[in-house]
Image (cartoon, rainbow, N blue to C red; front, side, top):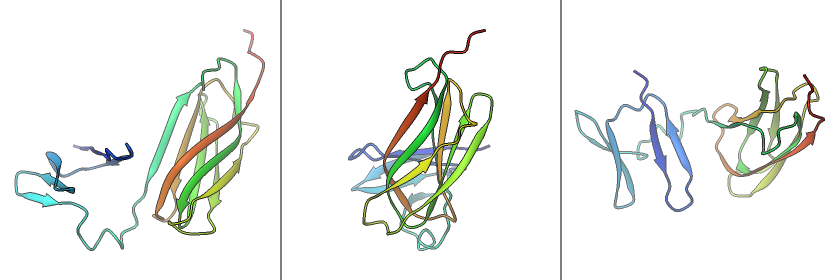
Length: 157
């Protein structure tokens, strides 16, 4: 069974999701994340393996029509982030047409910067899904995502 664990940071409302979560419960004790299963109580994020392991992360927005019923294309995707590597951005429409483009940062986790991804004219539809994922487990913090759309005429059927 694939168990999902979800942690919410109350300071900034950031959400972290874990697949195959091997615990039955989790809580915060004196600002330490703890989890429990039938064997014991564990203090999370304290092991030495976390710093060396490549952890794949993926954030998905949508599908959404951005409040506009007309077909549209993602023209420019601006990603504000702190990152020490490469992020892939995938845009998919409701007919499963998609494109993936990469953005490489010039700095590291302590300096915010903006990645600009130019869209693809072949991916268009009423609903678009945006997925952002790290490459080779690079560390990143997502600060903002702005999408400039090209709104097209309604499809008559």
